[in-house]
Length: 328
Image (tube, rainbow, N blue to C red; front, side, top):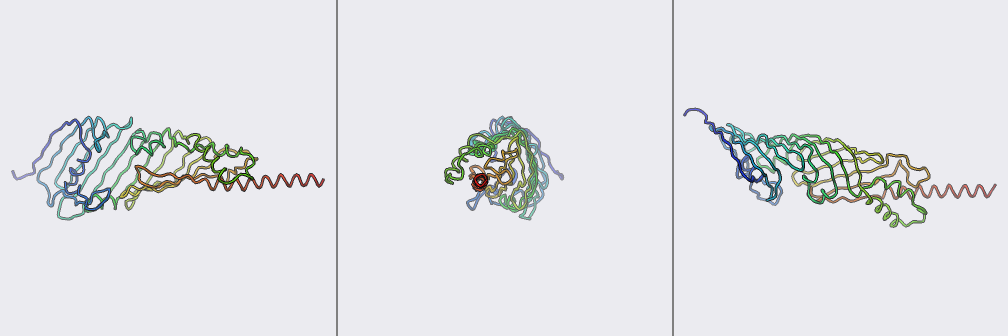
């Protein structure tokens, strides 16, 4: 009647599929994929002119599901829209013993194809294995608290992700990385007859000791940035009583491919008579592949080479002492 109309209401459903969020925010055409990719490249469609009807619908759902499996429980959120934008406001639910929250907005209605997708996401005290695929869940343990803000512009979800920028931080408590025992340094340092040991046998000994237990840390904190559709978390340091992990990781948001490298070095005094030189001892974990099933390759060549060199130096010094004693 000559002014903007307003719609308000509430809705309770037994199970809400998170895949419905994209067409709600960006229009049904935004779910279309013309190529084989993880993100749809169909155009955003939130209207070619300003809307005259605004509104807000509050939604509650005991279960939010993803691909038919429960993702969040005790969830609630609001879906609202104004003349230019659509918003997912205050999404909150329980997951992995903790909480996830999300706010997202798509702007702006009008004739321009490019739209802006921005928002904020946070998790609080969520078990890592609730957020990652089974291969990662089997290797890593801990509870994460993290938050991030994101912003991307494009004419489709794929383009917005490709141009995504943002930043965030995270804290992980009770962290454990299986098959990365920091006691490996003292263990291999006690090996005998290293000079005469074949490299393959020495490598097997290192691997056996590395698999003996996890690397644990009570807590660590890191940060990350998002630029050009890539998330990067560099210069992360994780320490415990015996060793230190240091390295960085990047994630291509468009393909969800990981690329990272972390080095473990000893942080305690090692017996000077040991074949392990604490200044050069290092074991690397090289991570690559898709987020849901990455591959971690262990590179112990630096440690093994260092052991062989120092063992040879120790043996040479011993022989020199014997020769000097014989000469006396």
